[in-house]
Image 1 (cartoon, rainbow, N blue to C red):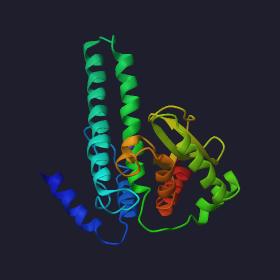
Image 2: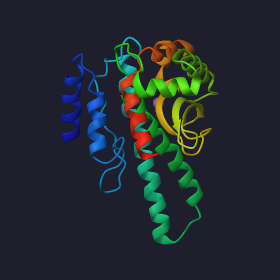
Image 3: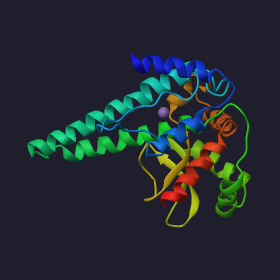
Image 4: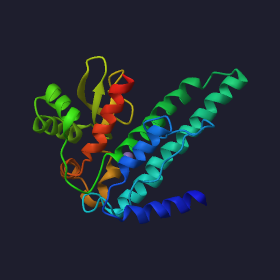
Length: 240
Ligand code: MN3
């Protein structure tokens, strides 16, 4: 009930032209994490969208955003809680026959939860550009913003079946790197901290774009909230 009320309120707030995602991020940082993905009792929790369901139109339609957040992201959160419960039960019982199954499931569901949580805050409805430290890291790592956009766009469009295009900070090299992630958890590099993620599962675009994933990716590249990406880089550099 409280949660429903909160979602309704956030939808009203989201109708304003100001993008509240950065304050959502700042709040979650104050609570001790980059994003609030788990509560004090150890249960995975899903934050409401930081804007109304129609905030990202026409790039992302209202129905898609609603279904995507509630059922695809929400389903992953429920799945991760179930997986964790089954792992805890196995440990309590001292029976590890299915431990491999549930740890693999948790990797899949929790990675989905992480990436979706980042994805929502990465987007806005106003065109903006990276600057400051983020721009310096982009130039150091890729040469220019255009080169990064070319690489990230191509990699996102080329993901086989379902997955994500990801811009991440790699602490072992102190550079940014681009990943083409399969599903939610495959084809990464150890240590990488995702800063900007593009969901290219069909559920992210099929109602509007049908099979035209490329058009969807091009549109998303124009609604990136670079301030959010910059905040994420600042946090990644601090926790390095
Ligand atoms: Mn998705």
